[in-house]
Structures are given as structure tokens and as C-alpha cells.
Image (cartoon, rainbow, N blue to C red; front, side, top):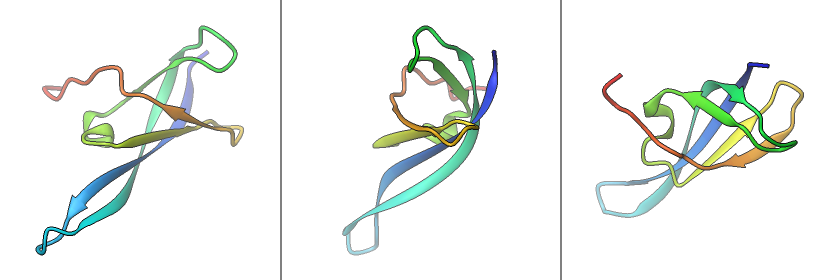
Length: 76
């Protein structure tokens, strides 16, 4: 059953002195398929996961899981 989720990412940005800093970003997505108890696919906008070093997904019940980017399509 589809469910809205919260997506949080961490990216690396550089300041004017080329020093590395971690920055978090957030967006939303939805769970479209659950194959196993703790597996599924999340659909979100490309800009939410673009250049992300890590991705976390939070379900409506408060549980949080690490996620991997399987693919992106920036044309849409």
C-alpha cells in the first residue's frame, strides 16, 4: 500500500576556502512497493537525492531506515 515518507539526505559542500562541510536536506517521497518486511522502493524528486552521500527514509510510524539511490532521472 502506498505511503508518504520523509527523505533526509546528507551532502558535502565546500566553502570559499575549499573546506568541506556536511549539509542536510529534506524532502518527501512515497513507498510504492514493499517486497520484504524492511525493503521497498521510494519515489522522490531528483533534487532531493542529487549528490547525496547518505539517504535516510522515515515512515509515518516514526521508523527510520537507511536508503540507497537506485536510479535518477533529472529530465522530469
